[in-house]
Amino acid sequence: MSRLDFTPYRRTTVGFDRLFDLLEGQVRNNSGDNYPPFNIERRGDDEYRITLAVAGFRPADIDITAQQNLLVIQGRKRDDAPDGEMLHVGIANRGFERRFELADYVRVDNADLADGLLVIDLVREVPEAMKPKKIAIGGQPALEVVKDDKKADAA
Image (tube, rainbow, N blue to C red; front, side, top):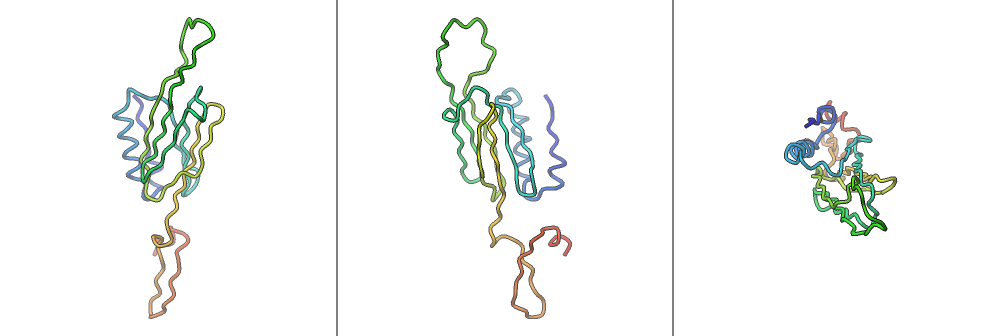
C-alpha cells in the first residue's frame, strides 16, 4: 500500500485539514478497493480538481451528488450483452461509489467526462460576511474587506 503525502498541501492551505485527514483515513480504511482510481489536484488558491478514471462509463451511467460537505460519485454498471462469446474479461465494468468530504464553502463548479476521465472542478467561495475585515482604530466607522489573506496574517 502506498501512503499519500498531503504535507505540501497542508502547508499552503487553510481550512482543508479536515479534508486531508478524511482522505488519508479513507485511503487507509479502503486500501483494498481502489476503483476507480482518482487524482486530487490544487489548481489555485481556492480551486481544486478531482479526476476519476472511469473508462467505459457514459455520462448517463454516472451520478454526481453534492450535499453540504459531501461529494458522492456513483457509477452504475451497464448490462450490455456482448455480440459474441467473451473469452477473457479484463476491463472492469462494475459499479462504484466514491465519497469525498469537502471543506466548508467548497462547491462543485463543473463536471466533464472525456476520454474516460471524469473531471470535477471545485471552488472555495467564502461568503462576504465570513471574510476578514480590517477595522479602523480611532473611531473611523469604515470597514475594509481584506483582499489578501497573507496581509491579514501579517497584521
